[in-house]
Length: 113
Image (cartoon, helix red, strand yellow):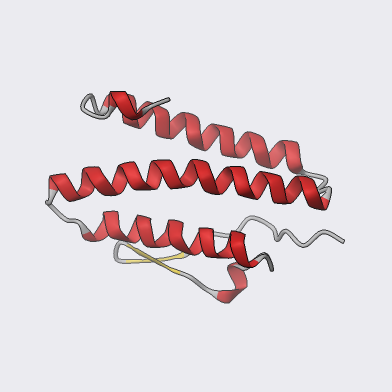
């Protein structure tokens, strides 16, 4: 049985995403990673004008997204998730966009692998 939900988006409130139990896919590790991604995103939104903090938060988000996607893909493969390739391509598009942002920022070039 497959237990990955349809694509969901967090509720956005003035710069914040609020985790809802309905976002859960039923895997504690993956759910915890998704919650942490939301926390990282919220940290960036809360950073305001603090450039050094924003830079650190963006780097942390970038690194964690790649780790989270890898774990999620391993989980989907273990489940035999039928839309794995489509979902993986979605991850690849997100990473490609993030790579572009990192490269365009100039100062963060060295972090893009």
